[in-house]
Amino acid sequence: MKRKSAIGLAIALVLVATNERDSLSTPLDISAPPQPSVSPVGTARDLMVGLSAVAATLLAFQGVNAWRRQLKGTAEYQVARKVLKTVYAVREALIETRARFTFPSEWAGRAPEASGAEEFAVLIAAQSYRERLARLGRARAELSLVQQEALALWSEPAKEALEGVFGVIDELFAAYDQYFDVEIARARRKDLEGVEEERDADSLVMNRLLYSRPELDGRDPFGKKIAKAVGRAEEFYRARLK
Image (cartoon, rainbow, N blue to C red; front, side, top):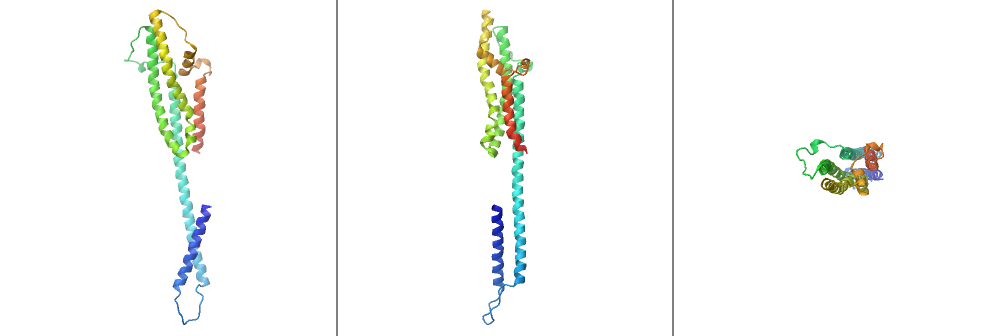
């Protein structure tokens, strides 16, 4: 519709300009008999020139629109690629955070004070996990930044596509404090009183959330939740790469 309006306006302007020029170029002679003000040959020539101008205007209009579409497409591609790259970094950080082994570098030189061997082991695990959560937190912050760019292009759907990823990160942070507070207290009682206590149901659930369980042959509900969240983000942002 906009293209047709532009063409019509350009043609109208050309015809008006042609008529005005012809009327001005003919001298006014009262004594002379009336003469046609426009010659057929001149009209045809001027109309051809005007139509050429219309064609040039139309081509320029199409070129600007194509440039705008290309610019928008490039911006969308770059933002979608950036978001996906950050989502994959978050996924790797989640996998690393949930690993059951502990690196000495995560606590070396900062050995905690403990009442005994049991509490020391739990404190080391908590300190190691805190280091991993710090790295995961930095990845989360980066994802939050690129999400703002995506929101500027695609509004709420861009945010909704990442809700699951932010959700699993927040679950890990929430479970950390609850789980290790209980575990430290349980380990301290064992060191001081020699009492062996079984983990309660809530502690078992949080343990399975905080740590991956490869020995269960893929039966890792929270791991599947992470994969589903990443998959949802992939589906939305990969479609913007085309």
